[in-house]
Every structure is written in C-alpha cells, then in structure tokens.
View (spheres, rainbow, N blue to C red):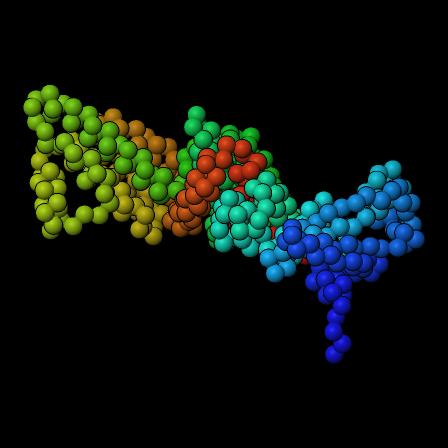
Amino acid sequence: MDALSIEAFYGQSIGVKAPWKVARVAIKGELKQVHILVECPHGIAWVDPETGERAEIKDWQQRVWRHLDTCEFETIITAEVPRIKLKSGRTIMVCVPWAEPGGRFTCHFEAYLINLLEKCRTVKGASLLGGVTQDQIDGVLARAVARGLARRQPETPRHLGLDEKAMRKGHRYITILNDLDAGRVIDVMEERTQEATEKLLAALPEKSRPSIEAVALDMWPAYMAAVAKALPEASQVFDRFHVAKHLNEAVDKVRRQENRQLTELGDDTLKRTKYLWLRSRLDLRTQVGIEFRQLLNGDLQTATAWALKENFNHFWSYQSWARALGFLEKWVEAARETELKPLEKVAEMIDKHGEGLLNYLHHRITNAASEGLNSAIQSLQSAAKGLVNFTSLRVRILFFLGKLDLRPA
C-alpha cells in the first residue's frame, strides 16, 4: 500500500471532498499548531440551491475552522470560500463538506465537544477539556439543539406531563412539557400562564394530538384551561404527588396552629415534631416510632389531620371507579367534620377536582418522571450558577433531557 502524503492524510481526516483539496500543511512547533490550507479552483461553477441553475459568484471570503488536535497540537483549517448570488437576490456562502454553515469548528471537532458536554454535563468542564471558551461551547449547545429539533420525527406520545419549575427568585417560572412514556422533555416555555401553555401544546404535531390519551398535571387553573382547549379529547389526570404535597402542608399548618395554642398553656408536646408528621412511613416499633405512637394516642388535632392524610393513600389503590368515588365522598365529609381550616381547604379542592383524581384509576400516570427531570434541571441551573437567561436554560434542558439527535452529519 502506498504511503499517504501529509496533505492526503489530512484531507481524509477532515473530510475534504472535490472540488476542495488540501493544498498545504504547515507545522508551527513554537505555537503548537498545525495549519492546513484548503483550496478549490476559482473556475468551478456553483449551483443556486433554490433553482438548480448556475449561480454567480459575488466574492471570496477567508474562513477559519478548528479541527481535532494532532498530537496535542491545535489543528486549524483555512480556506477561501465563495459567496454566491441567488436568483432571489439573496447572497449566501457556499457550504463546505467539513463544517456546517456558520460554524467555526469542523463537524468532527463539534461532535467531540458534544461528547465532552454529555460526559461533563457542565459548560465550564467541557470548555476546559476542549480548549475552547465557554461562549464557544454555548454556540455548540445552541447549534446541536437546533439540529436535533430539525431532525426530530413527528411522534405520537400517549401520555404527557405538564409541570412547572422555578427559574429564579421572584416567582419566575417555566413550564415543561414531557413525554412520560419516553422520559424526555418535549419543549419548555417561559411563564406558567394559559397563553404560554397553549403555545407549548401547539408545538405538538396536529396529527398526533388525537392519539394523546392523558395529561398528568397539577391543579393549576392555567394548565387545566390550556389542556382543555388544546387537547379536548385527552383526560386530565391530577398528579398524586401534588395531592400529597397539599395534604402534608395541611397537616403542618394544623400542627403549627395547635403548637402555638399548647405553648401558650405551657405544653411543649408538639415541639420539634414537624418531620414526624410529614414522614410517609415510620416503623412504630422503634424508639422514635413508640414516641410517635404516644402522640397519635393523645387528643391532638394534628393526629386527626395526620390520620386523614394517611387514610387518603388508600384512594390510589382502588380499581373500581364507583368505590373510589364513594371513598372520596366519605373522605371529604370526614375532613369537613374536623372543622380544621387547612383540611377543609384540601377537602374543597379534592371535591372540586374529583374527576381529575378519578382519571388516575384508568391511566395510572403521575408526574414522577417530570419531578425527576426537574431535579436534573435544578442540577443544570446550579452548575450554571442560576442561569437567569431563559433561552440558554431552554437550550441546556433540550440538549441534556430532550433525547435529540445532536451530532453533525
């Protein structure tokens, strides 16, 4: 086999194709750089991609790209690239085979940076390992997500999840649309208004919407209204963990109120017991469990609220719609009879949204996957020191959690 010349070697490595060819390779040892000059004949005819006809060359511009390092030497490609006039009047730069339009990296180097990002999961880490700036990594992220969204095939998810995430302090939220079956983020929208949620749902392919059977969401009116309008055939399933959160909050409010009353009488029974009432499982045979059992046997309003909270867990195991409905009616009545305001408020909420709770019996979906994705989003925010820019946050979410095809062709 004939040995390759250094020019032919780099031509194959970079992905140079006719009419382009590597004209010269220069190694600059003092700079630890390899400089590659790529050329093409000026007499080549270029085609207008819009009409398929021959295009007029307006001018030539010098472009520079970074390629994969050669033995720890930074590899730099330089080429003069023609700009052509289209029949429509626009001027565009000819596409080169080794890089995507507008990119400053070769496809190979950009794919390498994407690999680093996936392993490091931080912009700072990838920039240090790749020897590029964080701004350049931001560009790689943005191009990768745009590429992935353009390649995404129309899919027909059966179960969706709608959830909110605090973006920063000051009650600024984002709304996240998830494919619960695939465990991926479909898209993200700033704010949690009905209008924003409708825009988010409108991004779903129109042909796939009738196939969506159910949406897991909390009882936020904006979400409910948006789903009813955009996906009228889909069942709304209120998330069981959202209900559990309301019940825990109600128990804690009762505890705080009762603790204040007892403290005024010199009784510290409920002091330092907050987390005992919030735990979902507690072995009553342990020392802590024995002490908690004594609290339950006392005449405490908090114990009544806790018992109702725990009793509600039975609802999620029902198979029969009629029996589950009967359970809800009895539970709501019992909660109202306690005359404990926090519990009465939860009872009103459950009574008002009973259909969405009962829908769980048929679809058995929750936003647990969404909560897991939220934790991952929190990690992304923490790694980026808050990341107050929504556009950047959306790009990161879709890059790491969208399950997109990210690499250059």
